[in-house]
Length: 140
Ligand code: CMP
Image 1 (cartoon, rainbow, N blue to C red):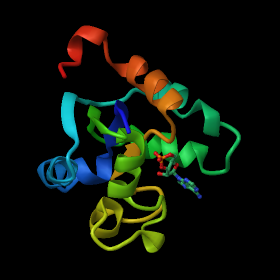
Image 2: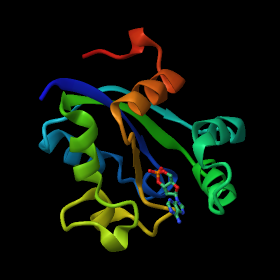
Image 3: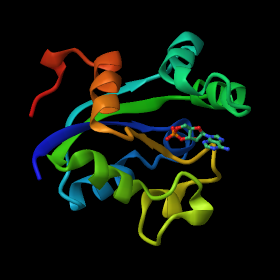
């Protein structure tokens, strides 16, 4: 296993309920380091571009509305096997299917308001990190 980086978003349902610290504790307790972090309110254009791969899906419009409904926290997480590790820490996309102890099992409201986003591959992680962060803003 190698040290790698993944991209994470703490979503508006979680910032609204003031859960940033409890979610970050899950990452850190599992051995991931938060090597970049910025709070932002996404524009419609940013949300549409970021989720462009889902443009044809029936949930796309609702997803963009939700992701622009309040502040998010944009993050780069670093650690051993970080992409897969973060996916384990988050749990299944639908909280109804998430394992006990995962972020989505504990905090998510439903499949859309599911508290966190995490990259699904190392390749997508690199693209998603570059979408929001300059290299000098990531301090490992
Ligand atoms: P995320 O990991 O951010 O990637 C796409 C998002 O679309 C997903 O998490 C969910 O928040 C959202 N979404 C809403 N409805 C669905 C659905 N039916 N299937 C998958 N993702 C959905």
